[in-house]
Length: 252
Image 1: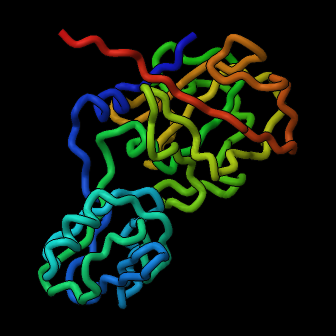
Image 2: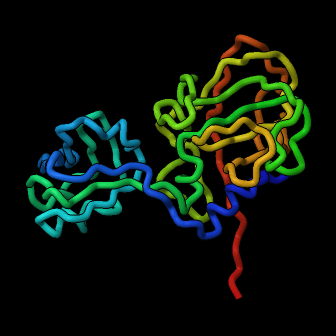
C-alpha cells in the first residue's frame, strides 16, 4: 500500500495560499542583536505564544526603520519562542531598534507538507486502512496516539504536536530529529493502520477539507513498519523513524 492524502491535504499542496496564523503590530517590538548567539525580537506585551508563534514558523517582517531588518529576517525560521521573545539565526538583525508603530512581525502557515501538518498527531488503529482518507476512521479502535514525548495533544495549541524537518531532500521529508514521537496505548489490539492529522480539530469523521495522511501498519511491507503489531494497553510506544516520499513529478 502507498500512503494516501486526504482531499484537504492535496488541496493545500496544490497551490492554496498560506494564511497568517499570528501577527504582532507596533512599538512593543524590539530587534535585538545578540552577537554570536541567535538574534531575537522581543515583545513587551509578551504576546508571541498567545498569538500563535511557534518553533519552525517562517517569519515575515515589514515596516522596520532599518530595511535590513525586514529583508534579512523575513524567511527565517523561529528556533525558540517564549511569551516575550522569539529567536532565529545569528547575524540577521541588521540594526538594534524599536519597531515603528505601523510595523509588524507575522508568521504564516500553509503551502507545504511541513506547514500544513505542523504540530499534528499520529494515531494507530485496528483494522484495515480506509479506502479514502476523507471518510475518517469509521468503527476502528484507537490503540495509541503518538505526540511529542507522549504529551497531551490539544488542537490549536503547539506544545506537543509532531513536526517534520525543515529541509526536505529529493522529495523526502522526515520526522524532526530532535523530537521523540511517543505515546501510551489506550487499548489492546492488532495494529492495522495509522492516520496522521494536522493541528486543527478533527473528529475523524467525513471531511474533504481537513488534512490527513493514512497508511498501513505492519511487520514488513507496510507504510509504517513496527516491531510488533500486538499493541498492549498501558505500554509506551516510540516511533524512531518516520519518512514520507512524495511522488516524482514529470513536467510537460
